[in-house]
Amino acid sequence: MNEVWKRNLGYKIVSLLLAILFWLWVTNSPSTQTLIGDQTLTVPLVTKNLPVNSMVMTKLPSVRVRLQGTNSSVNVKDLYAYVDLTGTTPGEHQYTIQMDAIPGIQIVELTPQTINLTIDTVQEKMLPVQTNISGTPAEGMQVGEPIIKPSVVNVRGPGSVLAGLDKVVVEMNVAEATDSITKSLPILFRDKQGQSIFGPDPSIQTLIASPSSVEVIVPIMAKETASKTIPLTVTSQGEPAVGMSLRSLQTIPDRVQVWGKPEALKDFDVLTLGTVNITGLAEDKTFQIPSDKVSLPAGISLSPGTTFNVLASIGKAPQSKTMTGMTVDVRNIPSALVLAQVPNKVDITIEAIPEVLDTLTASQISLWVDASGQAEGSYENVKAFWQLPSGVKMTSTPNVSYSLKAK
Image (cartoon, rainbow, N blue to C red; front, top):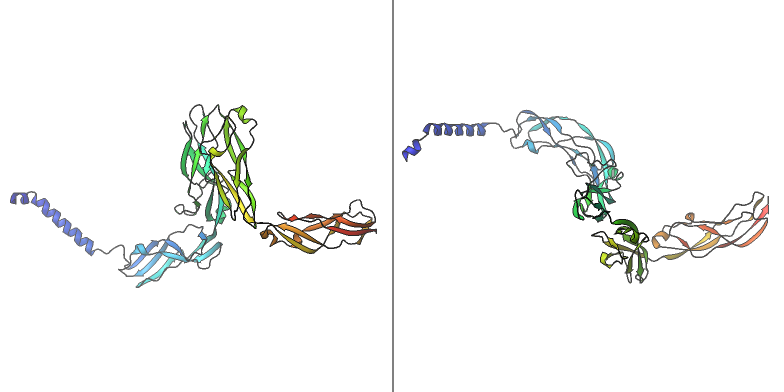
């Protein structure tokens, strides 16, 4: 046992001494993580009190700070400078760079002392998803029109960036594909030149899509198979709840790619999805229509994974409103004549959905009669023409009387 201990005894003694010396050096050396004496440090710059739905569009630099004093309880890694954004508004503004007081430490100098920051408003926007396809499928195969689920996503980000964004993209590689491809792909943001869109700090996510990924189906079909993209139609049956009306029926998507022999596709110009039942509906409803429930002519097929939705938009039924004392103009009076008697004021009854009627004013309605080619004399019960805002219907034709005389 003693022989084992004595073996390489010199090396063991030297190793022990080195370990003791290292321990003494560590315990007695001043920590570089504490504040001692006169120091110049580089600290991060952060923002405080940024208003809700606002975003800083300027990359924040580091700040050099000169400190004097000693405080062994402070870790320099915890130090930072900041700008207070309380009450700030969108646009470019200059802010003072600050640091909180540190016990026992004098903040001698901050460099820089101020900074210009651009503040933007956070907004949301619904954007269509576009598939960017790369690669070439296997010999004898062709790429069909991608199917994207969902085809539209909600994007949240700075308004200045969203204003120039008209779509988001996903990327799919079809190299050597022999069959249709289905993948879940992340939403990507590209500018009009196809370059990635980043904020002032690429490490911070500026734009957020919801959902952040979509399912993409890329049909891969034999080249001898022809294709055609056609519109969709759908009908409704039944009546919505009392006091409600069907505002619109929208197919999602509004067009679909079909496949088949050229002769089969030649006269196939529209695909009917069938009928949806809106009986008793009091609010919007989306109907899912399985592709196997859609009737197709012989020899024609849909791309794999095709699905259909129909959105029935339900709102309050149109209501009537009577507007009294409306003025009727006389237009195109012959140059040799003038009005002897102006048209009588009329009452009109119009019809529109409640949200349109609530904001409708008389100044938005034009009424007139056309005196083109008329001679001097009186004109009784002349039907007036009118121009109404979109979505407003005239339920009765106003008649007026007037007379013309020579100048």
